[in-house]
Amino acid sequence: MMIITDSASDITKQEALEMNIRIVSLKIRFSDGEFHQNTEEDFSVFFEKLAAEKDLPTTSQPSPEEFLELYEEAKDAGEEVLVITLSSGLSGTVNAANLAKQMAEYEKIWIVDSEQAIITQRFLVQRAVKMRKEGKGVEEIVACLEDLKKRLTVCGMLNTLTYLKKGGRIPAPLAVLGNALQIKPVIELKDKVLVMLGKARGQKGGMKYLWKEFGSYEIDKNEPVYFGYTSDKEIVEQFMEKTVAEYGLKKYEIYPVGGIIGTHVGPGCIAISFAKKGKL
Image (tube, rainbow, N blue to C red; front, side, top):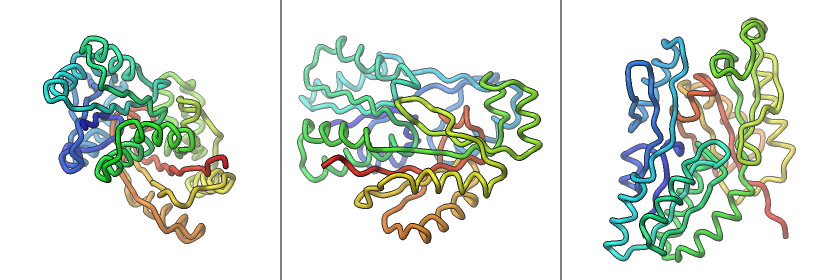
């Protein structure tokens, strides 16, 4: 079974090799050309460039042809294909994957709109890889992912309002005032799109807001909690250590976030993701 995801999962080239999956890249373009992110070092360079640039880079979805090339390879091998894409509320990547399926005229292709991004998209991909290793069939894996994706939540605290201003999401005077007052926006990926949960004063206030949100759900402790960060690992390590101690977490991981979502949230962002309990 060929498993394909896109670069919004922030899975590096080396990790993809180790997991035996394929990555189709969304494009990031700065004023001086396209930026490729294949390693964690590339993520760091991205945020350095982001801070230096006046305007935000543009991001765009992969072409159907990029998916088609992989589908044809699988078709020639008689191999099943599972595609796990960035949320359709954030990108048309899933449409490109579906269009390529029509072009391939190959029935053994299953496409899952993850309805997620970054660490929760990664979580779904890693689960699919684990189940494939256990010998599970593609339909069983898809059913699991469809259940899981509805129970996953990812929340984040932005370090600055600057990138919301650059993206035209808030007025410039509000960003200047908010940064002066150390206002930290708290966001969540909800119903396929990023929404503002609220604002906190200072980093500690932002962390408290995330803990409040985390504590408001009935967490499925059989699933790991993932922590994510843009450019500043030290901040999220502190947040993770306190969260682990406070909530007695046994399963948790920490991962960097790259430029696809990083373009819009900027450096110094921290995130937490978890699975809510399913309905009995």
